Image 1 (cartoon, rainbow, N blue to C red):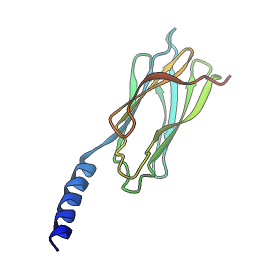
Image 2: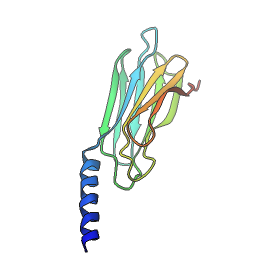
Image 3: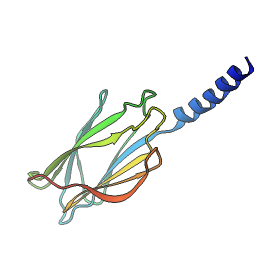
Length: 134
């Protein structure tokens, strides 16, 4: 009985920490020549956008990753002014049920889309994740 109480206590402390942890996706327009960035993202329950992100600015999506470890956001980015260069990608994905996600920083640049993750289960340094599709 004592071990069950200890388990329940530890589990409840863990769950309180889990609930207070927020996941975030931040998409920044780092394009040159005053190009605007078109963005639309969606999850199972939400649709964000479409919206236009001016150069040097960003759009932020904050949410709680779900308890089952299945939270996911998909995004489409398009380069202005004619928006013919685009990319569809997974902007956020939980790796495990205990992974609250952390912050996923996406930067749209002339040569592609870059990612840096902080916090969560798998933090990574900045790298080029995707090329633009013509």
